[in-house]
Image (cartoon, rainbow, N blue to C red):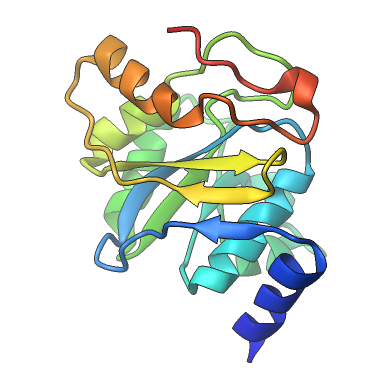
Length: 185
């Protein structure tokens, strides 16, 4: 029932559509959502994961999980991350993958909602360390489409792999179009 309500609101009322999916047989992956230009992107993720019936997660600083908002962040797929420790964040997140049976980590490789010319590469190294695929997801406000692309398995050749991944986002327009990521290669 909830899926029908999300679908009605997202597709009929707001006029968006979802293209593709993540195979339910892939319980662990790193999802790169591009472009990330607005806090509205969070809601696109919430709607699309609910319509697809998938558990999709994210990490956030552990302080956000305190009362009264902790339950909300956990309900929306959040996992707390201690950013104060001297632990390498890639290693810390790879440990989360080890500890969970299902963990589909959504991350914005731009690292901010502002204009960037290149991605931060933490997502790539997390996928390598956790030995999971990367699933590119495009939030295209120009077409009102959320597109789930096929999983990509990183090879360790980051320059080549990033060119392949970036190709999924050519022509994709973010909510704040002036901040949309434009693949450089």
